[in-house]
Amino acid sequence: MSAKILDGAALAARLRGQYRLRAEALAARGRRPGLAVIIVGDNPASRVYVRNKVRACEEAGFASRLIELPAATTQADLLGRLDELNADPAVHGILTQLPLPAHIDANRVIEAIAPAKDVDGFHVASAGALMTGLPGFAPCTPAGVMEILKDAGIDPAGLHAVVIGRSNIVGKPMAMLLLQAGATVTICHSRTPDLGAITRQADILVAAVGRVKLVTATMVKPGACVIDVGMNRDAAGKLCGDVDFAAVREVAGSITPVPGGVGPMTIAMLLANTLKAAETP
Ligand code: NAD
Image 1 (cartoon, helix red, strand yellow):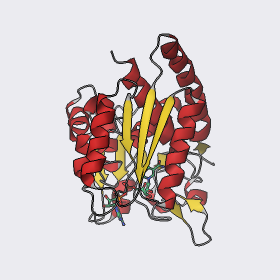
Image 2 (image 1 turned 60 degrees about the vertical axis):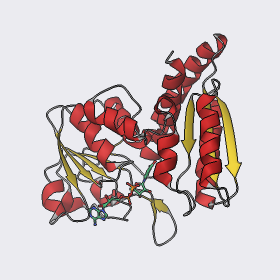
Image 3 (image 1 turned 90 degrees about the vertical axis):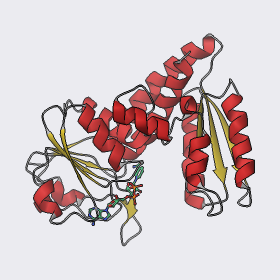
């Protein structure tokens, strides 16, 4: 039997509609949610991501401020910009698009964003809050996965969740969120021997690696929920995830497609975090 397709694009559209109403209510009280996005240099992929974020903000009735800086911008200049945005009451969320040019220390930049405005959830204070269960911003991609599970009626409590990937922006926070939700969590990575032996135990399998067809049908337990975070190009240049979708959908109980799964939820969660920042007195 073919898996249920978890339509992240439709869910994101529904959520964005709700966020718009909340943004309008805030704006009526003189506090329109505002997101500042900084991009340094002219990486074409980054430009597309940033444009999509700004457009999503505008469509949801948020104020967006796009700050485009030349590749030669110094770290001191960038930190100065962040100080200004940290102090600006009209700006509730700040993000610096990664990657940054090599002469800028990305960690130093991330740590310069006020945690109260860290809507990407990359600041060490946000990571610590997530780890300890304190209030804070969770990174958008794993937060989007949790919303997909919720919408699908999949409660992680008591289930075995396997996350493939241990990055700070996806794999690790994903594991933390699943753990908080009561799952038993296993994290796999590039040094994990016999990946399939572990993934076959997963009730929820999250792939966040960046490798075409890493997850094959034989690696999936029948009926499992498979979440594909990967964003890759196949040999024909077509956007695809980490999961062999055509084969795995015949085994899994539910599965996210690429495109149209996790990707749209990432931007929706950026709006959710910005709204939360604006709603916090
Ligand atoms: P990353 O390169 O930082 O991390 C990849 C992880 O995969 C590492 O932890 C590594 O240990 C693990 N890995 C590599 N090869 C492996 C293997 N053969 N077996 C098991 N694990 C292996 O990447 P990232 O930033 O975490 O992103 C992962 C993927 O998710 C990428 O394709 C990226 O484009 C995508 N992504 C998508 C969204 C979205 O909105 N959909 C957002 C962020 C990242």
